[in-house]
Length: 156
Image 1 (cartoon, helix red, strand yellow):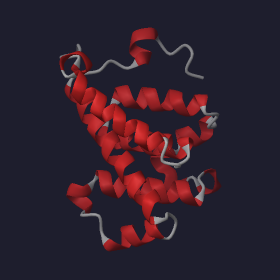
Image 2 (tube, helix red, strand yellow):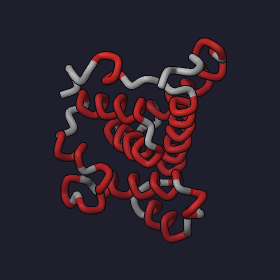
Image 3 (cartoon, helix red, strand yellow):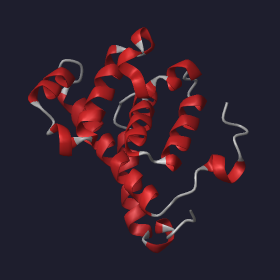
């Protein structure tokens, strides 16, 4: 499939606005590797090849072991590979991303609140919402993953 529209060129102010939210998330105090793991999991759920490629590369650059990356999709079975905060963030990311099915139940909220302070949970939810928006943009306009353009060299 070929790319449909370069939304960065067509709507630069809209792309800049999303970038501003991204900048906010990155300075929010949430750990970069936790945010990237959440971004990867959301992109798995949404089946966004472009974002899967990008966030896998980001996590590799951050030094996250390949064994951990291989189990992100099955994180509940990942045992000690995932910290308490990562497990809580991934669970929250799943329930928020799947809001149409989950309704984000009180039990999910309470579980996340046991691990995250109010501001952390709000910032995490902003990050989750942003990645869902980016996934929808990349899928809708057929952004091509870097691996497709350049081949797999350089990922690991």
